[in-house]
Amino acid sequence: MEDGSGGGRYRREDVARAAGVKVRNLRYYQERGLLPPPRREGRIAWYSDDHLTRLRLISDLLGRGYTVNGIAELLQAWEEGGGLSRLLGLEREMTRDWVQEEPVTMTRAELREVFGPTATAADTRRAAELGYVTVDGDRVTHPSRRLLDATLTLVRLGVPLAEILDVGEFVQTQAATVADRFVGLFRRHVIGAEGAEGLERLSATQLQHITAAVAALRPVAGEVVATEFARAMARRVDAEVAELLRTEQ
Image (cartoon, rainbow, N blue to C red):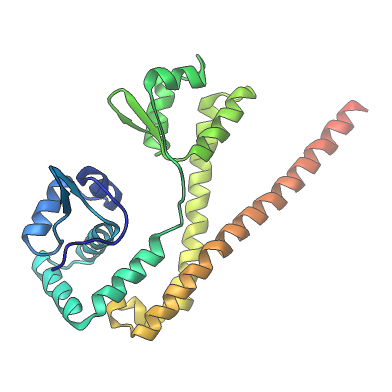
């Protein structure tokens, strides 16, 4: 099994976190032949996008009830037949580029300075529960500069951070519902019945078709949601302005 080298550079903890697995599982998967060794530079082990994709595939197969030995055999058969590289390519195409954000890391003192006295420790804990920040000792990381800037704009306009988090939780729930609907459409009408029995059953042509469809779905989904939200905001703001004008009369 070749050393993974497909783009990206992740330390052990980072790739485990991104894949949603425990750090100790990386060594176990390597020992069982499921995961190629990382590329080493001195004492640092660097993992790639291929490692991340493989870890996600392993987790998916475990979730479907495959045993570790069964996964090892399946991966070996796919590699020998050339099918695994196509599946990994499809997995990478399906998951990449949905989120392109610049994370922002600051100390707790800097966080308090940015948000002012209105932000509380309870707000920070709730933001962490919602996935808006990760806390590592004295350092706090926000995964999205755009969301951070939007939050700061609202805070400076006088909106309490606790209420911003309420709205954020609501938006997350609604966004998950919309994503479920888009994925359901894609699964039924693009992947179809054959893919539902396992992507490994699909031909190279079918996999290429799905890959192209995923690439087309990304901008379409974003445009639909952004356009409908803009239309809804325009209607709501018009109604609010009309109500204010009536109040002034």
